[in-house]
Image 1 (cartoon, rainbow, N blue to C red):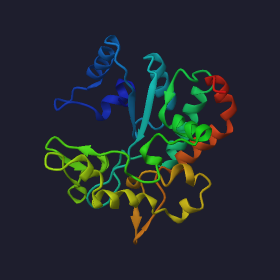
Image 2: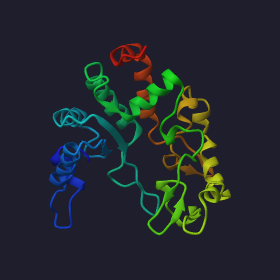
Image 3: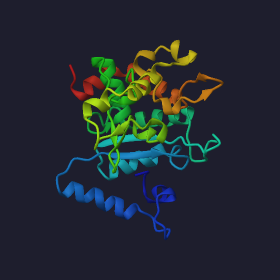
Image 4: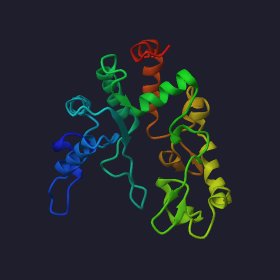
Length: 246
C-alpha cells in the first residue's frame, strides 16, 4: 500500500485503469476480522515521499500498527534512473517528519521497521534486517519451479544457485555461488569505510550501491539511514522510557 486512495491508485491500478485501493483495504480488514497478524508495507515513490503528514495521518486513521517503508529505486536496461525513484536526501526529510509525528505520542503503539532496526542495534547490538547484516546469506528464495536464488532482488539467471527439486537444502546453502554472493556485501566504498555508523549499516543493500569504473559507491539511500540513526541516538533515553525499556 502506498497511502490513501489518491496516492495509492496513481501507480497501483488494474488493466482497466480501476484503482486497487478498495480491494487492498478490504483485504486488510478481512485479515483484521480473522485475527490474523499483518504489517503494512508502503512503497516510497515520487508521489508520496513529500507527503509524510498525509501518510502518517492515514496510518493513524486506519489504526495500522506495524509499518515498513520501502524506498523505490529502479533503472532501465541502460542504467537510466526511472522517474518514480527516490533518493537519500528526500528519505531523510521524510523520516525526520515521520519521527516528529511518531515520537513520543505513538511509542510503542506504532512500530516502524527502520526505527526498530536502529533501536535494536543501539540497545542490544542486534541486527534484524538483512540489509544491515555483515553478509548477504540470511535466507534463500525459492521460485514456483523450484529454482533457488540468494535474494528476492536478485532472481536473475546470473545468480541461480540451483533447484530445490533436485538438490538438498544443505547443498544449496553451501553452494559456492551463494557464498560468492554473500561476500559481495563486504566490499564497501571509501565513504562507508570512514562512516561512523559503518558497523550498523555495513553499506546497506548492495542493490542500492551502484558500481562505477569498477568501484562500489555508497547507498543511494545513505542520507536517509544516517538521519534515522541520528534521530534514534539523540532521543534514545526518551524512546526507551516511552516504550517501557529499562
